[in-house]
Image (cartoon, rainbow over the protein chains, first blue to last red):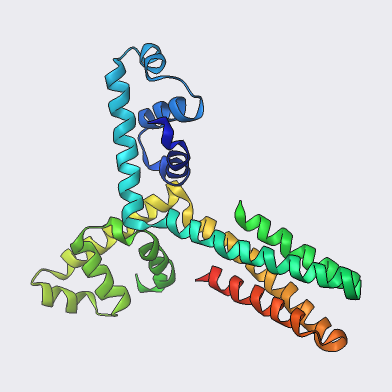
Length: 121
Length: 121
């Protein structure tokens, strides 16, 4: 299951609060704290298969919500636009450095870059 | 209920696909097609109170998901950054119009504006 850690982390970031406390606990130990299923099982006093079932069910629920709402997909499409803004910012900065050396132009360009960076968070 | 149409439209845009078909149908007729509860009730062959219950329950479910995930709040915070980008774009455009009249600068500025507009959608 761990080969899908990026996708799982995104699902958990968006939809983790919709899980039960137990699902969140196991998911967190497995994907964020990198414990094995056996380690989690031992700590919780249940079978390895039991832990696995809880995590698999949590994944399926979150994936189902994403399939319906498409909100992660929407966030990911934003990246393309932010990359295009960054490219244009660098074009303006380069023109300003070569030709105008205008500090107002530099400040405005830096400002756009900062705001675009904040949008990535 | 209709004094909250903006909030309801946002909830529906984000989480509408998580509702049942019947909830979606009534919600849509009420908020998007602007039918009254009585009109929806008559068409569906159920009581006005029955329609109202379905819609109120749908609203509560979507609001609960938003309270847990905060995804609409996250999208709305983005607007502040996009407004700041737009303000900086206008600053660059103004400098260019007054001082440099550089078509490359104009194109790059227009490009940032277009990408930022796409991010609002």
